Length: 154
Ligand SMILES: [Zn+2]
Image 1 (tube, protein in one colour):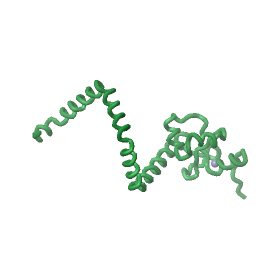
Image 2 (cartoon, helix red, strand yellow):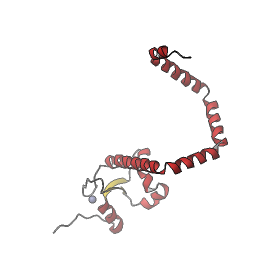
Image 3 (tube, protein in one colour):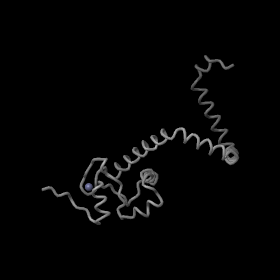
Image 4 (cartoon, helix red, strand yellow):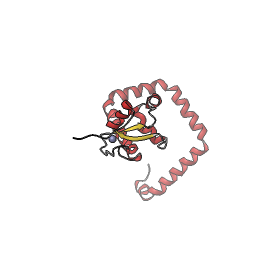
């Protein structure tokens, strides 16, 4: 029976000790641990898939909400990184903005990275060149007409 008082008084020490122990153990048995894990996953593949499938079915809503929250977060990071406004007219309303493939090769790129995963892809790839932020108007004008024009008010 571990002594609670002793544990409380030496909490940090014990934590450190355990942490170091596991670190050491892990680095000494890395390959063994890895291959055991791999074997376990291979042997229990179907069970695990079934578990995942069930989990997904019962938590569909939460997972969907989490994913869309993540997407919004990542989209915002990307929009801000590429200037946070329409590169043509300066519209800053994030509801109007979208990520534009400067060379209009979005169709090809979308085959590799679907639009829903584009923000995450851009973050992971360190914000590559070839992308800019446009408002929806200028994005579709560019795609349909190949040019961008400013709004005319009269
Ligand atoms: Zn614009």
